[in-house]
Length: 45
Image 1 (cartoon, one colour):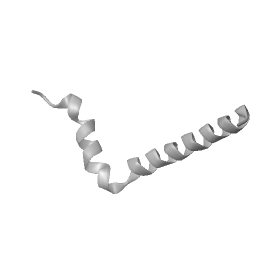
Image 2 (cartoon, rainbow, N blue to C red; image 1 turned 90 degrees about the horizontal axis):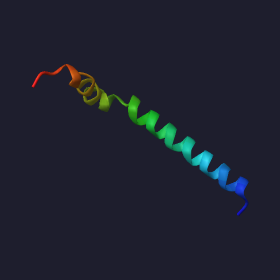
Image 3 (tube, rainbow, N blue to C red; image 1 turned 90 degrees about the vertical axis):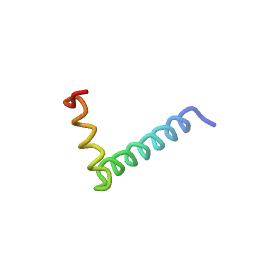
Image 4 (cartoon, one colour; image 1 turned 135 degrees about the vertical axis):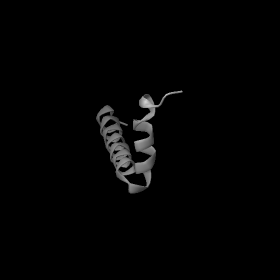
């Protein structure tokens, strides 16, 4: 396996993971979890 082929494969895999994270973040199902997490620093114990 050529070194450039390995670099291309890692780049493509990284891009696919990045797009997967974007899709996961922007799903409506996760909105309440993220809103709750955003308010954690402001909650008093």
